[in-house]
Image 1 (cartoon, rainbow, N blue to C red):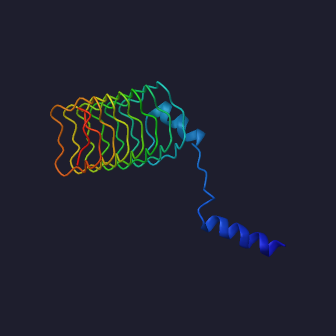
Image 2: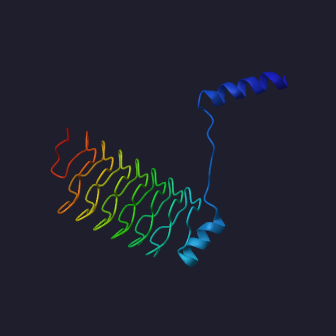
Image 3: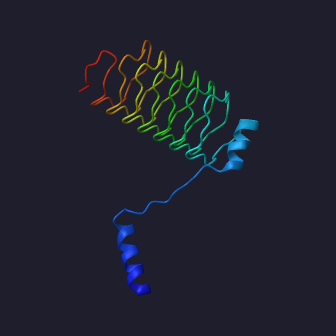
Length: 175
């Protein structure tokens, strides 16, 4: 009986039907709130609506599926951070460093990314509708299938960016 259960569980795991659940470390959430220093922290699924986290150091932090809607992350360091499927709607990210960050499937609806560094960032499938990207550096970024409808993009650097299938500010689809 034991061996057949192990075989069944192994087959289910191999099929990708079992996932590892990571949750935000409460001590690290409190550390971020108190000190704004949380390099490499695990903040998966953290709920931090409307917090002032300006100039926070979140380099290489895992913020997958985190809810940061309305928070202030101006000047924050998010280099190589994981922000897949994060809710960053209306977040202030002016002059933030998001170089190399993974924002695949993230919602940045109406976010302020003025002068942000997004070089080499993965924004595949991200929602940037109505976002302010003026003077942002998106060189080498992956914007495939991203929604940029009504985004403000004056002065954006897009050299080497992948835009295939992206919905551009004027509504057309990039080829």
